[in-house]
Length: 162
Image (cartoon, rainbow, N blue to C red):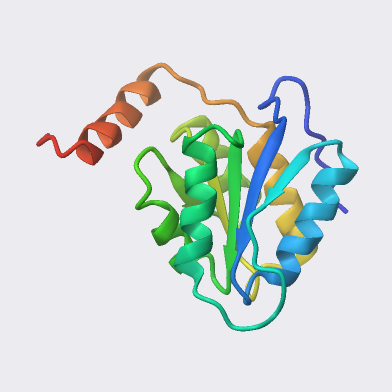
């Protein structure tokens, strides 16, 4: 299990949206248990088995849950984290980051204000994944010069030229 505690200085998550395709199903289930054990409410958008499904549906579902404020943050999982992150990032307002270690998870939150974490169920072990999740949830956005950069990303999303 993870040795990182989700502190009060981090995001006070009431609810996390989880979504995965068949390649991420088993890791999703492990993360769901981990979060519930920490007292964090989980909105599970699926999938519910190892049967082959299309990852864009689950990336979109988590993105929608975050942008409509049904959940504070999201976690998406496919085989590598890549495809499902691309799908989630198509939802306006989503900043999904594929993270393969805890440092990137911290930087994604602190510098980029990422609101969706993407993981690879076929490339990341459970122990490491739980550490990454804990760091992602415990880290606050730093703001400052980073807020200006995140606003530029939002401007691009609105179709503005930089």
